[in-house]
Image (cartoon, rainbow, N blue to C red; front, side, top):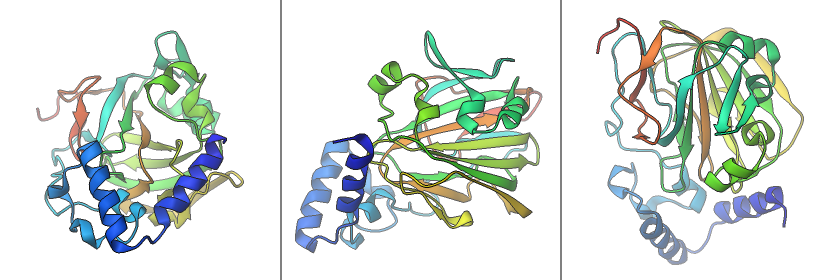
Length: 273
């Protein structure tokens, strides 16, 4: 079975309204297997009518405090920080040692890629055990979004090592934000096997592992604050985060760290420690 076909099957199973006792048994098995912290969930396990409702669960108020200092870019997701660094002048990012990809291909727009050359980037991997909603990393205005159709390869370590330009091949959604303190920011949601849909509620967008490309500029731009909900994945996947401000410095985090929504990733040089 192809990766897109497998993802569609998993999506149908995730949306299936199974008998309550059956669903609860399966959810408890999933919680045990992936060590999901149910104490953070906004609803008890029995409140979810489908697997997908559980996968995209909201958290209780206050369990993800958002850093409030000026000049910060915060994590948009609970994730493992796979990479953190500068965007080189040629605007190519390392996938792994010896393998890189063009930022223009990731964003689906060469002119937009030029904006982020010399800025900073982070690759954030969401495992199946994690909270799957994605949040706004800066105060500012959403100015545009772009849907780039593609494949649905896995985004695990093996796939990252073996699939050339993985993040430029998979389906993805690019959200562009004009940050109040840090200028242009791009949040790239990258689809994966079993991630049959990504949603952007502010845009009324639900991807379905296919369809034509789309690019929408918001007129007027949409005002957002750090920590506002931006979108959601079904199961786990990857976010590539870009910021154009060359003065940004890591805020006490590094590659391999586990980070949470609202945790500072970068701060402007000379900002509050």
